[in-house]
Image 1 (cartoon, rainbow, N blue to C red):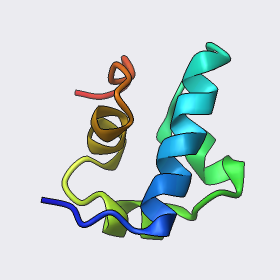
Image 2 (cartoon, rainbow, N blue to C red):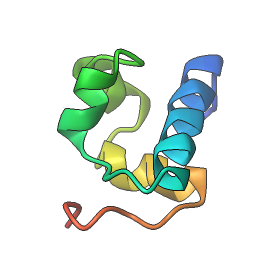
Image 3 (cartoon, rainbow, N blue to C red):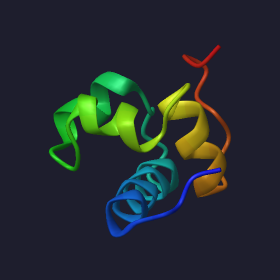
Image 4 (cartoon, helix red, strand yellow):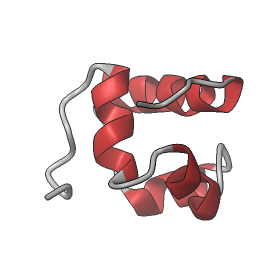
Length: 66
């Protein structure tokens, strides 16, 4: 139910890159990345942004996700 924009794809590519480098994914890491601020991240992927964005990116959800 998400209409993907250029910003969505930028976040997805960032997540895929982090996963390929075997770096842990977290909300805090995304905040520090400079790719997107947390408020916008929650607006782009409402109702569990990290879980939804990793699903779209085709990677396993992080252990930090419930």
